[in-house]
Length: 146
Image (cartoon, rainbow, N blue to C red; front, side, top):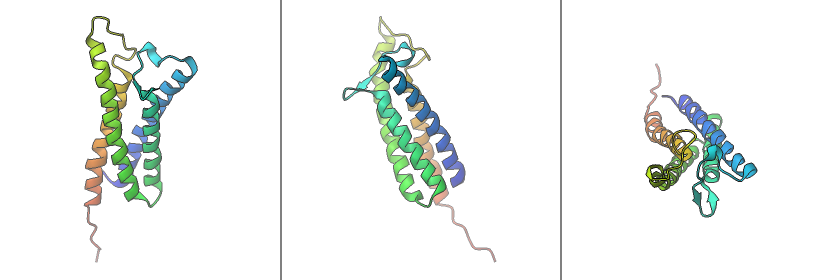
């Protein structure tokens, strides 16, 4: 995967994550309840989807900058750092909901799993691509032609 394909893939994943977390955030702001009639995990007094939205937006902006500008090294660092944080954060939020999933009064999830689980999938995909694809792209040596 070359650098352009890498950034295009990260842009698509982070745009999907931003739109999904944005929908959850707007739904919570407008209705006061979480989307899909699910329980809302909170972190530091705020819904987790708010943090997810911010992290996906940062990844989206960094990937756009990496794709269309020269600051690729800084973008790599931002993408790796935020995807690690997002993976741990979404994993923590999912771990909070696992006991409720299997309890006697288990809530029904409108999408089958807690929404944080879907965010976790996107963060893990971005994380894996950030470490695997960027290493491959940066190790390619171009030799001059004669």
